[in-house]
Length: 501
Ligand code: ADP
Ligand code: GLC
Image (cartoon, rainbow, N blue to C red; front, side, top):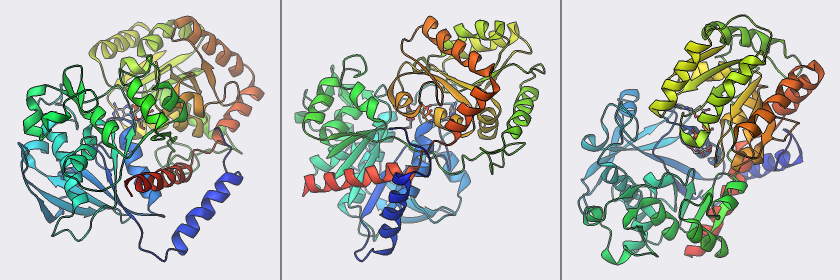
């Protein structure tokens, strides 16, 4: 559903939220939002942004608290963590302390303090070279168990979750622990990306406390291995994914990553729902402090200033041609190979390309080769800097996002808000958030020919100021309000709670 900002639905949601705030006679339901990344501290992609925004948006209706592992980035950012409870050891998983902090805006965040598992240099999932930690089953099994322990009630904590909201494979073992320990707490699992499943060898079962009886096709077994994500899908009261189209796609063999049969069953049981992500209010070109020059719907002039700044930053030549941006993890999912292949044509058409992100070595080095081949026309920055990413959205004319699959995608929403028109494959959340020919350009096949077709349409639009500015304004006016998603989750929380009784 593609909706303009400020429409009747937004007004209705505002009312719902206001009544949620004022008519609250009963105590708010307690939701524990469990995540392996949160952009307040550390993120490797969109999950970090969602985990920072959605719990905050849900606070109008619920007593929402977040649970994250005590990574080094969290400990460094917040040396003031107060220890509030002890999480006992179980199976082969170590004991740890549970810490608590409050964010500046008053969100309670529980932090698992376990230096042997989390206090390391690197990303949430791997070392600085990008290699996954070899004990990720313990690290994230411990996270799922902590969530279940909090749901079952910790004597010292004085707070107990009425519902667990889990995200992706790293927290997906929590619903299984609830089932195996007979803890009657409803749970919702959100799949942000079905392609990452958390697969581990069978011999790890006892360490994780997985009963032998659960190692079967209707349980946690997946082709001879143990799958964290499958466990979550099997045992959660409700499963959501981050767009409606992706919820349909994952029920097909093409997108189902071997779990499509199980997901079709979920759908038949009324346990699967697609809820589109939103973007938070910091994405506003009128007020974003990262931008060299603010701009808005009524005055687009500042966009040019930002474009010039991006060109300077990336060492590109002065140009009045179109500027294409890529802000992405550099992985197969994102169709980086198609972007690389299309670059020569873009340059020949008088366009320039700026790329930032990190990921697979081969893509990083092929992109760097391109920037050497086309100095002044192609700029590449391996790494990630939030301010730079925002300036790229604001300064570019088009965003390239030829994803092979895209559960939701945030970059295309950020780009639209900043008046950069996405050129994207018609899949998942891209199909649900981009209106072809109105706010961006969609193409169907994951082929160079199809992508170039969309690029030519974009270059054509660029040739007509009237058309271009009309599309920019349409894109910038689209609503991607978190309140809408929060209302969707409220419905799912009710269903999950009814299911558990
Ligand atoms: P995904 O989560 O699959 O990477 P999204 O479109 O949902 O894709 O989220 C992309 C957002 O994640 C970008 O807009 C940017 O804010 C952030 N991002 C992209 N690449 C990186 C990176 N290498 N490190 C940290 N954040 C990144
Ligand atoms: C995943 C998906 C992306 C989605 C993000 C946040 O990383 O790849 O499409 O936007 O999660 O839900």
